Image (cartoon, rainbow, N blue to C red):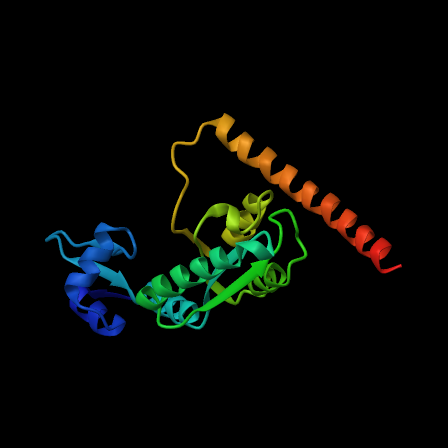
Length: 197
């Protein structure tokens, strides 16, 4: 069954102007137009759209912040504050998950919680300040999983116009930082044992 734009707007709880705007942006289009140019909408398609919208409203929006080490706690707080401010303006409800650990550590508590929410179909959107806040390596895989589960990723600050050499330099520095921290952390632990013996 097909109905007019006026009846469709009443059924969907939006104005006729909104329906026209949605059609221009391809968010929701009419099924066909009459010879006189009047839009006609499928009742079945409207019901599906409303059901999907209700389903998305019950899903969570999560902002994720991460820093690599304890001496970056101020930066973590800045990330959390920025995400909190952004989300409070754009979303009715949301949650901020923060992590302390290397971008190469896949066992962080917050990251595991985020993955659980994605895989259980409880998320509609993830907000990040930067792409590498999620993971230094492997974030593309998580983005693909998000795409599969219908989770939108929003990155507040995309790194633009970086050459391949600059990206490679960032990756090499990250690896050196992680392995240096492990090596010096191990030495520090051994030195403490010697001093207390």
